Image (cartoon, rainbow, N blue to C red; front, side):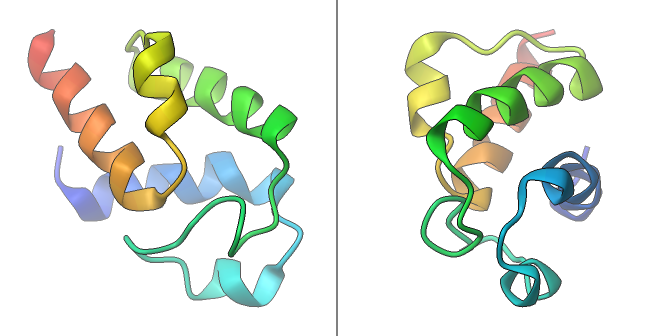
Length: 84
């Protein structure tokens, strides 16, 4: 799955938790979930669970802790998909 497709899927997952709509409209690889989108850490856990369901992957705790930006999340998703 390419980055653009992953970002599109991520946008639908992240949207309900976003507190900064303007930053969401400009979401890209460098977007930080907490700093840019004002998503709190509790909601990050929800996002990780939704990502697992949407991409049919399992994300371990170590990877989960790294999923703070769009770029890191894409890399983790691609890595988990390639392990399937």
